[in-house]
Image 1: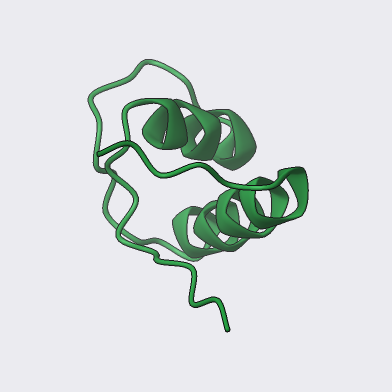
Image 2: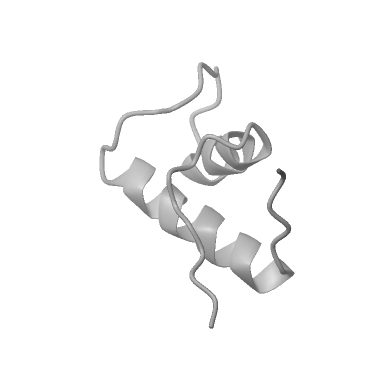
Length: 56
């Protein structure tokens, strides 16, 4: 089942992952891109980011 995120959740997930990548975390997709934000967006599009959203 594909998870539907709000735009705020998407921004938070991508931003947190981009920060991890900029601090040296291993990449989860093969890409030629070097910008952490672009890499995080690509990972999000491929649904491989290991971050979940906890809702009340």
